Amino acid sequence: MPLSRKPGGGEAARTACIRTFGCQMNVHDSDRMRRMLLDAGYAEVQRYEDADLVILNTCYVRENAVNRIRGHLGELNRLRREGRVKKIALTGCIGASDEAAELQEQYGIDLVLGTHNTYELAEFIGLPTMEETYTPELPGVEGQKSAFLTIMTGCNYRCSYCVVPRVRGRMVCRPLENVLGEVRRLVRSGTNYVTLLGQTVDAWRHEGRRFCDLLEAVAEEAPRVWFTTSHPSNMEDRTLRAIGERGTIVKKLHLPVQSGSDRMLRMMHRGYKADRYRRKIEVFREHVPDGTLSTDIIVGHPGETESDHEATLKLIEDCQFDSAYIFKFSPRRGTEAAGMQDVVPPDVVQRRFLEVLRAVEQSAFRRNQRKVGGVEEVYIRHGRADSGRAVGETWSGHAVHVDTDAAPGEYVRARIESAGPHVLYAGRPL
Ligand code: SAM
Ligand code: SF4
Image (tube, rainbow, N blue to C red; front, side, top):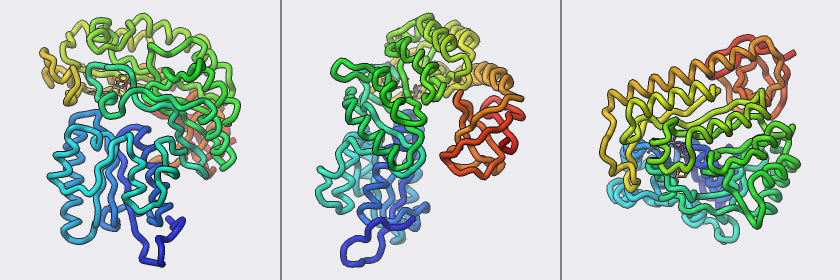
């Protein structure tokens, strides 16, 4: 990758490697750090051994996350002893966690940043006036076809199992005009797909305006818009209607349910019952008949009984998801659920996990089959499938592998030839 500016005095180029773990928020934070690095004259490299500075931008949502990072830190320490890596930075959610200080001590990490002070990287890499240049409200990556745009940070919920409020703090919403200004800048610089990001985007509110107002305003400016993640307690019917009505909004809803059992939802402090969730889905299906629906489900939260699990399977049957992220419960230090009794034995968790997975895959497969034979307008995204086909997305939010050389950001029309539970497959564009 070319340097955008060399560090003063023509000194040798410095190199940096960013490794990202976890969710789209982290991908977005990495993009922000990447821009700082390029501005400071670093060239990006892909391998640790080629990097002067390695940044591990981490996720803390599941227990093995920390162990995984320990593996990387051990390897980096070895490379540093051999003189191949000079500095190591730990950022993101583990950087904001209780374990950060211990990891820093043990592995001699040079810089630890949480999710709130990512912009302090600027100072570390020698950028002047970083406070003015890099605020926590950094723009998404410009000049690319697709961009993430953070509209809110933190979370005001206190779900029993979740570390996010601890590591990302309380909700802070970005003003509407500020968001729109950034959307316009991005669109002017060539972005044609904007994804609004936050832990509970539908909880966004500012000066009397609510999320739907923001979404509709963004949908006027950007050619293609999506948003994630939403919370069922905040999801308004008018937002669901807007997804169906507005031509520029991708018809895809990610609405994490976590469990189909009211008892578990109460224990998790989710703030809704399963039937309220079902009603939301009915509204979505009514107004967005061709849309795709995905969710998050946690299997094996402490106290989950066989009948709670059955209730989750029933909800999956009723909602007919197009896809789901299924998580085995993982105790996170400092959360309420980590201290709960009634831990579900691992073999039971595994069986329930597979049952949930099978139920979701069956409904996803059935729904995907309905697309076979139809012609779809497909937006080409970044990257390619192992088969060499381009990875795209329909307006209904289905992932499609298409046999085309079209570049990211372009649209092609193609016939869907076959479908699996996760992806549709299309031939040469028409
Ligand atoms: N804010 C989103 C919401 O409320 O739905 C989710 C954010 S969280 C980073 C993403 C998903 O990770 C959650 O929806 C949940 O299913 C899963 N998750 C979070 N903490 C977990 C834990 N301790 N064990 C297992 N899964 C967890
Ligand atoms: Fe975590 Fe989402 Fe619950 Fe917030 S709403 S505490 S981010 S699971």
